[in-house]
Image (tube, rainbow, N blue to C red; front, side, top):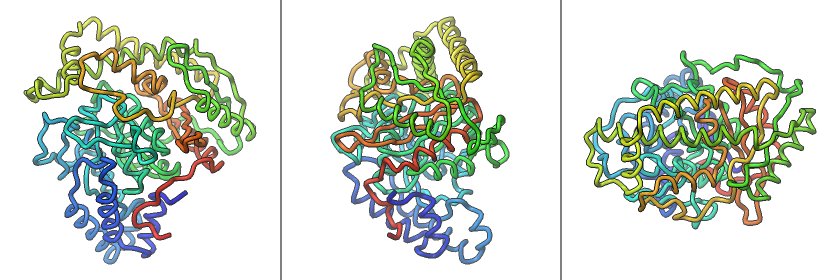
Length: 470
């Protein structure tokens, strides 16, 4: 498996290496991997100071140190999302200057309480508007598995850094697939949690009308489970499954979707991976229930409309509230802001009502099945430059994103949790990702099924984690 954050935390806890040594290894790896463009901002002094604090705690307060799931583990925040003190976010835009830095968000404080040592920000497209991470201000983020291809977006820098082994795990956000798409591009595990499972406060609570979630991109399902348990809940405890299922002994009805419609066809090798995953789960005694595209077609279209309207209105409001000089932004950003300002209130109201119906339709579907197995991407990661931002055609841009990840927005608009993981590789040694979606609050179910698929060993990371003893 080439190691994960759990392995690195264990090595630090047991004294195989210090937090400072782990941090220095990550800083050195970041320098070696600079051509990937994964990191937009790096503060080595911050990282080393945080690691030194972690090492002191290990020596002086070992019991307290031991309570931190990721004590001493280096990580990176995304250049977009709730703020981390000392890390000045620009959201991939020249409109925001790298200066100062807000106080920690609630989520950031939980990252620190879990023991993480932060030392930088990962690359994001301008204001997160793309499924590629290629902001005009740079750096241009490449896929470590094939630098001619995208690492995805908008958490592409995070995924590239984790896949390349610069860090073992990294903060990420997801408003329209932005955790799952980069994870799928780079052979990682990415989970968008249930709406409300992860804190967004004090000023990020209803960002993007609730469609955005924050968590991480990970190298393993166990890392995903551990960080979700560490960060979720309203009282620092795990976000419990309100409908417990004995996943080890119970028989689930797993909906199985391989048709993504004539407008957004999915390539055969990606569909085959979903079929292989279904057979693996069926061999465990679960019932596989075929689902038709007709059951999803309206919801996918409505989700796309809701995503477009919400991000456009949000961007227009942000630019107005912060009195930003919009003329300096990328042409596509300017076009989305103009789209938001021109949206009729009644149109937005209808779109938001449709979003509620998307949730209702999924709840109705989950009355007869326990989760849904489906494709994550329609093709291999696309070439660098496939999502240009030097034009003003927002409809074309949205269509390109939907064609690449037809089922990504469904989880964001509905609020349901969804997880992607690699389940094999194609003829170019690129990952074949699958996606699982579950009812609200059923992250334990997603994680259990994902762990079962991961145990098949169909994907191996290409790069080891920096600093992890071999």
